[in-house]
Image 1 (cartoon, rainbow, N blue to C red):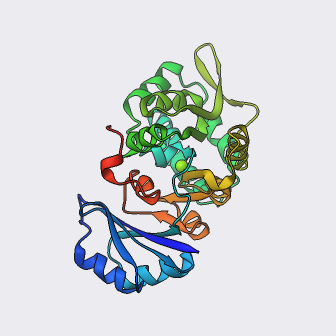
Image 2 (cartoon, protein in one colour):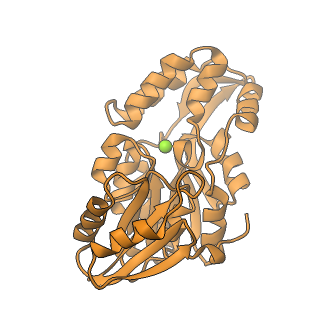
Length: 295
Ligand SMILES: [Mg+2]
């Protein structure tokens, strides 16, 4: 199997130097260097070696250098379907934690969120518990949080716009809430969004989710459904997320990327981006920076 190893640094904090790249290349005899973005991203290969072996060899050669190292099959890297998680992936925050903060119960809810996303609590039960604590919050307050406290992760728009420009279908999937995903879909330019609907009565949250609840199985099921609708094999799909409820989707996708992910997710998924922003997901697909859509 022909493999490439993608190296991605964060140019703002520590550029990818030729010295580092040469160190990596020596771990993969006979590989060639192909730069995707100066001082930021390159790939080594293609060479006949298993991805896991190549990734380990290069990671070891770079010690703890702040560089993402991802080995992938050389062929078929440009994906036709993207499913991306919202909270702490496309957005820099967890929306439910921001809502709780407005209510003055931020720490209480954030602790549950953290344990849920690390897989320590049942997703559906933890969601119900946290939503119940939001009862009484006005929809106008939710709208204000959605407008002012949901910063995008750098690279989000470029990722989605570039994949769309190359014919991919892009879906925002969230165990969070449609009050947020609908806005984020529009801001980033996704084709579609899927999330839980918060029940509203008299302009206030009732503290309940309208069934059916999107649980930890929902995202993998959504990936399969969209692939079938588009007549795509799973090889042509890409999934992106950071939390325990993303693991099944990440493992089912042709390319599953754990983005600045919780420990349980990092252990379950071979491809990880810890240093790069979301444009790293384009480099993994072999896009050069000069092919990116304008933000
Ligand atoms: Mg998340």
